[in-house]
Image (cartoon, rainbow over all chains, first blue to last red; front, side, top):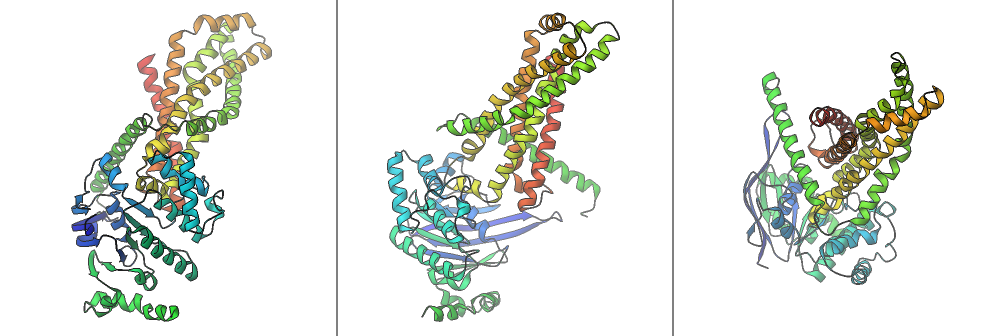
Length: 261
Length: 263
């Protein structure tokens, strides 16, 4: 893999408004996501965080611009090329997106059954290994509705990891979790990333906590991006909208670190 | 500017065209998905059980009551011309060519189509379909095609059951209640129903089955893009109602078109 996993070049994405006009969610956006590192995409509601993830996955196309993944432009790819593009990714969705009618085991086995030629025995072995690593032993036969929010996230992560992704995308991974569970989940992400070595892209508005994981932070606001190499760099920014962002969201950052100490 | 009626009309026209295009591509992908490997045989059987076997009771009662009403109404009309002996012919032709395929499709739309739409819609809003896409699993092959194959097999079979039960209902009403001669009832049926009539009923049932599964799963699949449907659980509920209404109306329109072309 190259040094840069993902690159946005002058990406524009807009949506129709009810008055017939269009709202630009991303307005000629440029940024790089380094390979093997953790990038946090932060910003308020409706600023285009989830849209950015969907663009990376090819679930929607930009109006203008290029999106390079491992050097290849993924805009307007055909369906078979898109399939191969998506197989590089693992995604943990906001609501985990587990299949309600399947057990935990079947949920995790789905990508292996559909995308590999592994025997059921090998699939079982691989799943049990993952369940053990994610402290989900004994949950195999339970249904998603019988799991806590934190367990659902773990199962979602287990499923996303089955095809050994090069890049993991986390969409608001701690929404709806209590602070203790949130901390556990972030520790789990950090451990798993260290173990597996994938590139992480985390979209979150849980600013104080998630920034502790970040090697790079991208702040989306008003259709534009600001890229920072560390959370501390954000605090030093002279831009007015970043100062406002710091004031409203990061006031708690040092407090959260004090709590950890 | 936004209240300009011409602009609104153009806006609606563009939306309808976009929706038709989207649904057309969806139909194509649904059909193509049925030929893609690996086949989901167990899921197809599960869906056949749901669409077919699960609808048998509804079909039985609908067919029996329809057949009996046809027997009584037919007797009343035919007796005015002294043609009670033609009752078997009238009941069987009406059921095989018209009411069997149409009422079966309407019952399947109401019972199984609504459930399919809600299931796919919920999967869409809870990102389960996006999850399939992200795992590079084709959602058409994985989710939609087993339902399509199930409808393709089940609806003609249910129609056949409807025809048989309906004719039995007509026989009970005509022969046992109104005293029509059983021999003339059976003979009228045998001499008037041709292979062409049965073929017409079969073609209708196949087309209606495709229409119901296409519209019902398609509305659920595109739940977020349907104008006026709103978001979340409310959107699934609105789209489910819309799917049943649209598929029922389409069945009735196609019934006329197929009759006009094939009769």
